Image 1: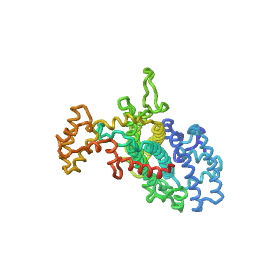
Image 2: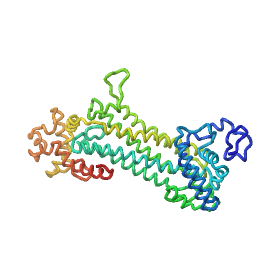
Image 3: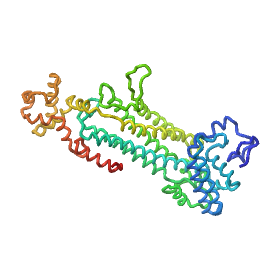
Image 4: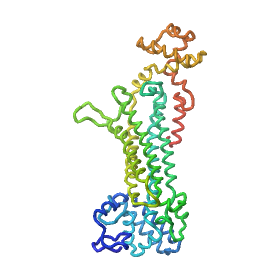
Length: 468
């Protein structure tokens, strides 16, 4: 590759300019330290582009073969490089790949950029990367789902309080609780699959903004790269980052779900609740207080949503005022996207580990599920079945709760005489209806907490997630 007088590689755009770029300009402009993340995607795209140029008659079959062989070898070498090769002096990953290719095949390497711009090149690289990241995150989400389903399988019938407003509401089973998060994560999988689909369009052939003049087969090119189709408008193709926003949206919502799970487990692990015991391997102690066992992993999972939302807002703000087509502002699209994916991957993996190593303290869970007069709705339903309008039944149940509170007892400890004082239709059979077991079993609808329904749901999820 041609050199500047100072010995640094010439810029890909250097012919129009005299002298070397200002060092401060290079500091703000050069991006190899960031977009090195895309080196394998850039090489994949370059191999595909060589074949497209061969199909267009720009390269001979022998030239295509030489370029492909050199790029495949370069791919292996790049995979072994532990950090961005900043001493190379390359402006970005695209420059580095072309520079290294030219070292291997001489002037033939300079032909590869024919009809291609870094604008459609980086858009292609980033789309390929997003598709791969979606697939990785989907696998990690499903791993966490399996950990939750395993909890559900073990505790399909074991009771725990269900809450609204963080006040005891109605009892549910631990299995039902775990499956609630499985459902949230299933929607995250849907969003990631949607983001993957939106990214799976090939911009290659759009060139800088108007489309290439060389008769490459863009559909064949898209198929070679694993995309579903080529993009339909060259102006939009080089300036579109909606697919990255879709990924960031999916990442933000998934991070929010992880935060909700973490918050609830943090509460459950407190001495005041004592529903769960966290494994020592995912907790820490105090430098001062010897007795402390802190849920640090969960707290950091909970904190992750702030970073995800910040990165999402960063990208949205970056794009909001850009005119067509490419603007250099878009070089700043990658740091928030890369950071969000690295962090989400880590949090999903540690969340699965925390969940699978958590022990439920069943006595504490059941004791709490029995408390708080959480069976009062069952009492109202009982009266409805006796012919009482629900609003009246609700009123009667509320008065009986007040009686129980005054007496410092549970509803089922009230005497039949007390029950009858508030409603004459209450009979001895009310006591069987107010047991914890009966309250759970009677929620026997699709999606309900009845243990039989929970086991059905667990079996369905085990099949869906490929669990034995």
